[in-house]
Structure formats: structure tokens, C-alpha cells
Length: 77
Image 1: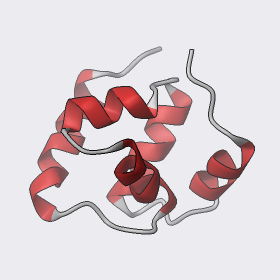
Image 2: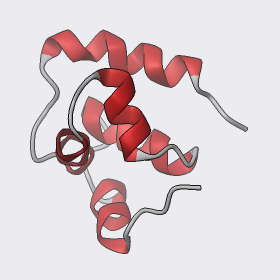
Image 3: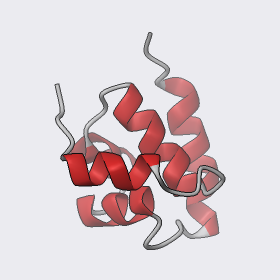
């Protein structure tokens, strides 16, 4: 089970929930999906994923549909 640092969790939870990267971060934390897994699935680096989660950078528009499909196909209860 992946473990996120307190700093990352706080940054994500206090971020702008309307940004797609932040939505992805909240989704992954809630569903215990690792950054490495997300990075591999989306074809980007782990640092890119952390930057998206924290709102340092927004994903390029060409990643938006891939992110939405990723979240749709991995809903875990």
C-alpha cells in the first residue's frame, strides 16, 4: 500500500480541487494508488505526478482525457 508524506497530503488536500492535477491527487490518495503506478500508466515521471498533485504545474491538455479515463477505470471501494 502506498504511503504519501504528510506534506504531500496536506498540499493536495489544501489545493484547488477544480484543477485536474489536484483531482487526480485526491483520487490517488483516497484510493491508495501509488505515484509510480500513475506515472507508468500515464507515461510521465513521478516528479511530474507530484507537481500535478500539488498544483505546481497543470497537465498539458493532451493528458486530460487520459487522466479522466485513468480515474474512471480505477475506482476502488
